[in-house]
Length: 132
Image 1 (cartoon, helix red, strand yellow):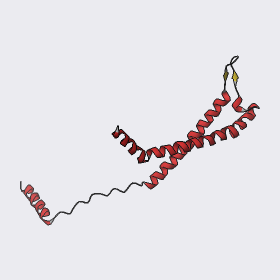
Image 2 (cartoon, rainbow, N blue to C red):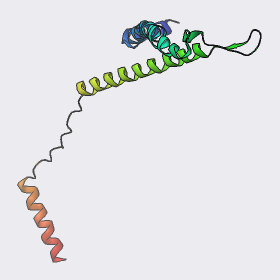
Image 3 (cartoon, rainbow, N blue to C red):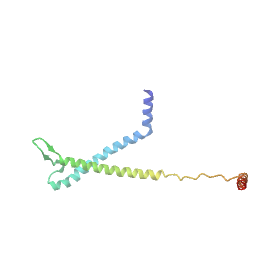
Image 4 (tube, helix red, strand yellow):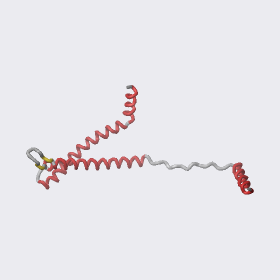
């Protein structure tokens, strides 16, 4: 049990959990902005075509069964806007990371120069090969 608690402390202190928590909180706050944008700006503009509040557009299938088309379309618009904004945010963060973490140029390993003795030995080996 103690090992599990220590692992949990290590996980929390790494920063990944804190980053995730901040992301969730900011995401929730941003969702309310997107909801307001869709409900207060997009829906009224679309509602002009229906001459009614767009989120209230329904198709009556029976006595008590309705298809809430307006609400569904509003939810789809919310999703598309949130996905697009998240895509742009992730793309910007990855771009900043790439600039910060520029790959270091790979240096060629230096080959040490051959000593005079080694050069002489190689010449002797070549001469011996020629004699054979």
